[in-house]
Amino acid sequence: MRKSIETENGLQCGGRFLHLSQPQVMGVLNVTPDSFSDGGRFVAPDRALQQAALMVEQGAALVDVGGESTRPGAAPVSEQEELDRVIPVVEALTARLDVIVSVDTSNPVVMAEAEAAGAGLINDVRALRRPGALEFAAGSRLPLCLMHMQGEPGTMQSDPRYRDVVTDVGDFLQSRMDAALAARVGRRRLLLDPGFGFGKSLQHNLTLLKHLDRLRDLGCPLLVGMSRKSMIGAILNKPVAERLHGSVAAALLAATAGASIIRVHDVGPTVDALKMWQAVQAAS
Ligand code: PT1
Figure 1 (spheres, rainbow, N blue to C red):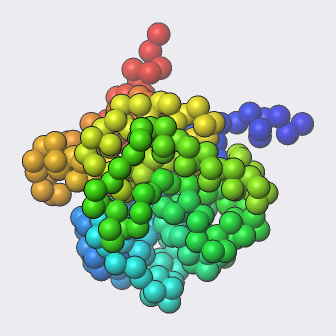
Figure 2: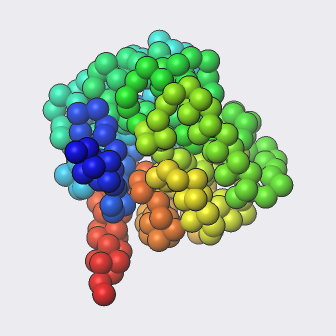
């Protein structure tokens, strides 16, 4: 009887199981010299390990390692540079920490090397649109996050337009799910993400957050990332370093809308807030 496996709400992430009956926190670990909020601080593998260990201690179920900055205006990175940044960190984290290591990449070579190094999830902001990415997915058993982005990081914030942002993002995610299914990637391996801040105005982001529950109808768990982003900065009129409380509020709103994984920089405060949220959810 495989029933218990199939009805268990969660994802098999390589050797570790991620429970999704309550929202989980994914800690951001940028190993880029030019990240928007912590540029260059965690590039050396020992610094990365130290930061990841802190996030695990604070309750992160996943750590998302990224070697390509995809914030607005960011420049592309070469494959070798991305491999050199990401793979040693994935190896160090999987060897030393009890956590699921997610890798934020669109490059199928990086995906494959990351899986071999012990990664448990692939987080692709380009939703497997790069040549070879669907083929990687078909040959792998890892869960994959498919994110919506309009345009490319270098130019995506110059006048983004939608007919209806929630419908358009939903249609895009459905089409990428269909592409994955056609490539024989099981629906049960997929996570979906509306891509807050990726080719979206403030109003687009707010409308997406308000109607996030509609994307649950696509039938896959939702992953969201709003932590410290300019949508919060624009509302608060505050710089990146002063967006913690706005970010925690956004995390709770996402949890209420049904998000399963919340990608954040500030793991401890977000975990505390979600514990309060969870306690109220569980009340009669
Ligand atoms: C995200 C995400 C990500 N965000 C997933 N992966 C980033 N699955 C990187 C700004 O407006 O939301 N989901 N990987 C970071 N990207 C941005 C985008 C950072 C916009 C900052 C902004 O400030």
